[in-house]
Amino acid sequence: MSNVSVDTNDSSVNDNQPQYNPRRRFLTVATSVVGAVGVAGVAVPFIGSWSPSEKAKAAGADVEIDISKVEPGQLIRVIWRSKPVWVVRRTPELLASLNAHEDQLKDPNSEVEQQPEFAKNAYRSLKEEYLILVGICTHLGCSPQHLTDGAFAQYAEGIAEGFFCPCHGSKFDMAGRVFQSVPAPSNLQVPPYFFKDDNTVIVGSLGEGENA
Image (tube, rainbow, N blue to C red; front, side, top):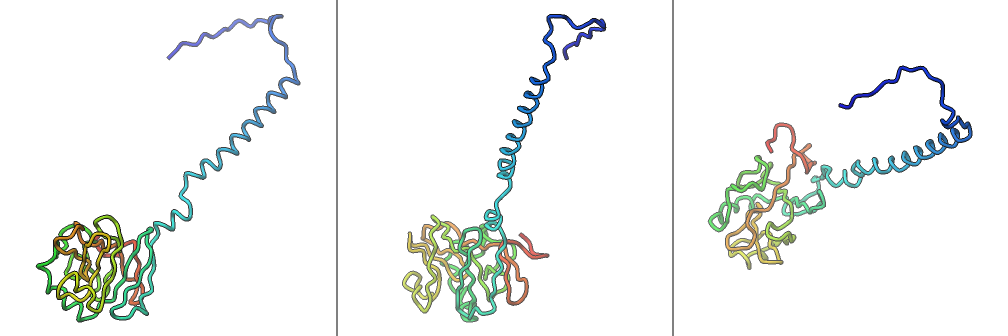
């Protein structure tokens, strides 16, 4: 810390000292005020840019899905965080067939963390009937096709329905579990979600009492 010298001598103003000029004083004050207003005008939009836009907020928001009209066997698509999300209403017959091909899967028990804790089961879902997945292949990000009515059997013998990625040939069953000997390294992702009621699913967060 530097020392400050204090002059206690009460002397008169020196004749060589500049004299007070009212007009100059006015111009100095006016210039300062205009400069301050200009800085404030620039600062407002700059500070405003720190806040996320409404579009950005919406991009990360939860998505509410009405499933009341989804028929058994039907798949619907929505967008959540700029990603496709599938909701499939699986039939009892399809659910019963899921354990028949586990020996052909890379991760039949969902050991790799691609789902919330509640989906670490054979169905990879909160309710067995409804499968909810992020529709992006875990290889290079293509979107697989949903093949039904026996069309999937050409890629997995004896399995009538599943997801096939046309980009590099990865395939997944109707629980989103990846088959062996394909490029995709892991099962399809299950997003966080919960059922608001019997007809409404909220994708993007977990309900009370659900584990992450």
